[in-house]
Length: 151
Image (cartoon, helix red, strand yellow):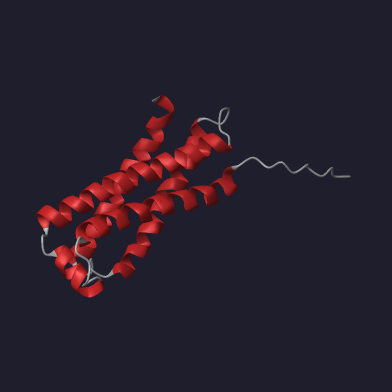
C-alpha cells in the first residue's frame, strides 16, 4: 500500500477539484452544458501530472516508466471513481431535476438515461486518465539516447 498512498492522495485531491468545479458550474446554472466538462480533462491532467512528478521526486531510485504509469493511472482512477460517485449522488439525491434538464437537451429518446450518463462520466474519466498518463510519461521517462561528447 505504501507506493499507492501518494497517487491515492493526489486522486482524492483531484476529485475534490472536479467536484468543486462542478458545483461552481451548478451555482452558475451551467452544469447542464456538456461543453464545460472539457475542463475536467485539464483538472484531471494537472492532477496526474503533479502525481507523477511528485512520485518521481520522492522515489528517484525506484522511478521507472512502469512505476510512473501506475502512479498516473491510480491517481486518475481514484479521481474518476470518487467524482462519478459524487455525480451519481448529486443527480439522484441533491438535484433530482438535473438529469431531466440534461436529457431534455441531449437525449430525449433513451429509457435509462441515468445509467448512460453515469457510465459516460466514468468512461470519459478512465479514458482521459489513460491518454494523459501515457502522454505525461513521455516527459518523465528516462531517455535512451546516447549523450554526445563535447570536444
